[in-house]
Structure formats: structure tokens, C-alpha cells
Image (cartoon, rainbow, N blue to C red):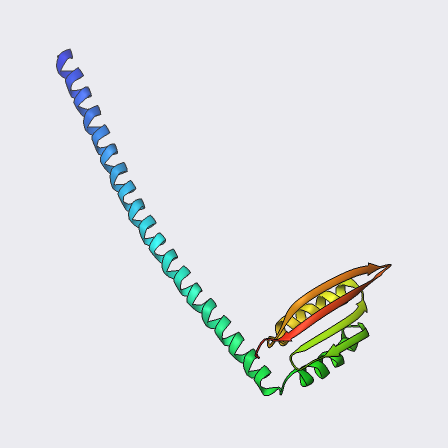
Length: 152
């Protein structure tokens, strides 16, 4: 009788272990399916994000270029830049302008110069910064900036 009880206990333990193993196997299989589904969704979302980013960049570039095409050239851009210098609290020391170039020598604090450069990059996309030099003089900075009309 003891022999049968041991067999029954061993058989029960084996069956219990097999049930536990199968349940864990099914749970793992479901988790792998969910992981694959989530990875697929992540890839799709990344693709959509890339498309939206490209569309936004094209829209921004097109709207900025459209604004710049409405201007007649370097003369109008120069006038606008010179007008904005007061807003950025920069002092114009010297400037020269050609048919496709604009050279500026400015004086101001670092924050004002940084804001001015950000303005140029955002609003004056038709002009590209060709040369950029800064020198420190006490609390102020001297900035030499050479801009070229990128549309020509």
C-alpha cells in the first residue's frame, strides 16, 4: 500500500508540475505576442513621427521661404536687420553691404547676441551666416557677422 501511495504522490506531483509548466508556457507565449505587437506599434509610431517631422520641416521651410521671397533682396533684409538691432539692445559699430553680402560689426552682451543669432536663423532663412567672430571686451562682446543671400 505504501508503494501505491508513493506512486500516486509522485504521479500527482508530475501532473502538477506539468500543469504549472504548461500554464507558464502559455503565459510566456502570450507575453511574446504582446511584445511583438507593441514593437510593431512602436515602429509604426516612429514612422508616423518621422513623416510628421518631415512635413513640419517642409511646411516651415516653405512658409519661411515664401516670406523671404516676398522681400526684394539684401537691401530690404538689411533694413529689417538694422531695425531689429534696437530691439535686441545691440549697438551697430559698422556695416557694409554688397549685392549679395552683408557685414555687421555689433556690440552687446552675450544674451542679446544669442537672441539676435536665433532671430536670424528663424526669420531670415534666405540669409546664411558665412562668417562669425566674437571678441570679449569687459562686460560686452564685439560681434563680426558676415551674411550672404542664400537664394542667389
